[in-house]
Image (cartoon, rainbow, N blue to C red; front, side, top):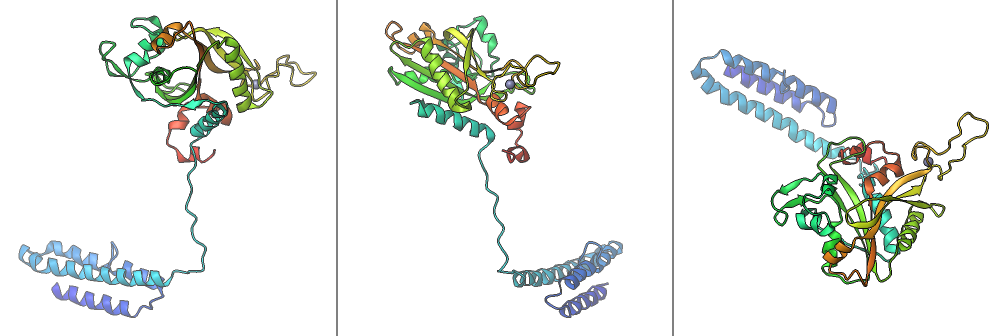
Length: 350
Ligand SMILES: [Zn+2]
């Protein structure tokens, strides 16, 4: 048995020596024949199983050593061969470059429009105290408005002790005003969290961008002018906005702000003459000509008070928009979850 191994070793070594350095195919055949999974060495090693314990102790290590030696022989020469095969004249492989996620592309566009209008960018913590997330924003405990925000609690307890994953970017307004005095113009981009079932249009985490303006004599018309200019900056100079009454606890009055549809230009005229349809628009605006874009309103006097701002002297407006929704509209993405899927094939498209 030992002799069988030694003669196989000699045979393999001799054969290898006769293979030309450049003959890769022959070397690969040699590897397969001798040290491959079903090669001669493996076959011989199988026979070890039939030996007595004594014989195994003697021949086992020898067999292993021979196998290692032969594999090393192949590897060493293969490495040398590989080096010799490098063709320096070939063009290199171009490393793949990453780019910004479509969510951040949209976020940056929005930020740059507001920077151009003199806003500051402010950020705050994603894990927030219950006080900043709710009470300071005029959402007292047990207030039905809290049902609007299904909250992830990090620590559930009394209001002053509770810690939450922030449900909106609005708490940053309060934090920012602790170190500022009016006039202020700031925007707050960031990730927010809601404890809700996810579907094509709802995620348990998503991105908002929030704005706050406080100064003397700020009125609803200032809000309209500011948002109108911002939406023109984002979607073109022909974009118009409209306000509908709505309710948010931290503003009074509150509005939903729609913009004229960026796909069909807000046209509710028939798209063609002579057809049976009398409605215009498109699928993005659901044939209404308008697309819901923002929530907004005049900052509630209680919130101003919590910001230590004198509401008899100053007034302000706030607004917020969903960056995910804007990304979906901008790129025609049908499902909000795709942005968080971690799928490189998805991100590469944009
Ligand atoms: Zn449309």
